Length: 86
Image (cartoon, rainbow, N blue to C red; front, side):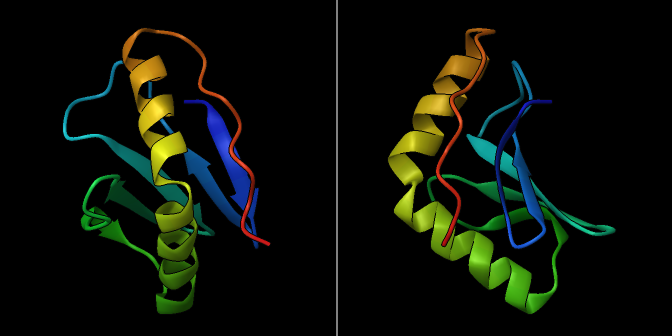
C-alpha cells in the first residue's frame, strides 16, 4: 500500500486496485480510518478528533489530487506524492 503523504504523525495511504467508492486510508498511531474522497465521510475505523480534523482539512484541499491518485491506483500505477498539511 503506497504512502502518499505524511504530516503530524498521520500516514495517508492508498491500495492498488481497491474497491469503490474512491477512498484513502489514514493511520495515526494505533488508530486507522478509511475516508471517502468525494464526501470526506469516514467509511470505516476511527481517528482521534484532532487527527481526523487535520486529515479532513488536508483532504478537502487535496481532493482533486486524491482522485487522480485513486485513478492511478486503479490502473495499477504508482500514485503521486501529495503535499502534506503545513
